[in-house]
Image (tube, rainbow, N blue to C red; front, side, top):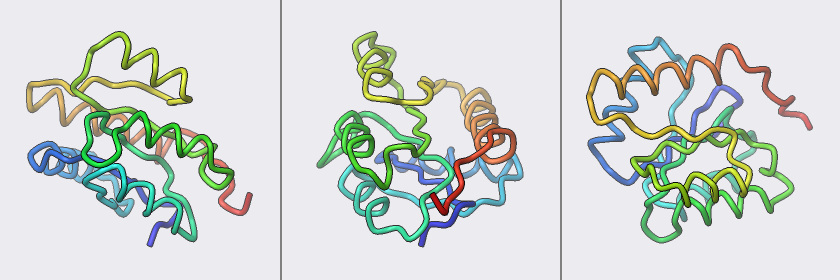
Length: 140
């Protein structure tokens, strides 16, 4: 069940999932971490949630429904349209960056290949979205 102190990580690569969760814990993020391993799971989780997560970290290259289509569906739905979405992907393709921002992504972060840089990037993202950013009131 999502709560306002939840992070939704949408990641199909088990290694990247483990690294991201480890990075979140290393950054002392206490938020619950929900995992969706494909786009369909992500949308089901969001659309069935009583309370939306504080942020969604979304990979682009996903099975079933790709990340750009997930983002499009999130922005088209009244319940989820204002949910902060951070694209966290290995793609540095200019067309993916442009499409992500065109569809309403709040941020686009390319996954660093090096372990230390990856954990630092994910940790900083989580600190920002869970501790610095002012979230939308969940009662909206």
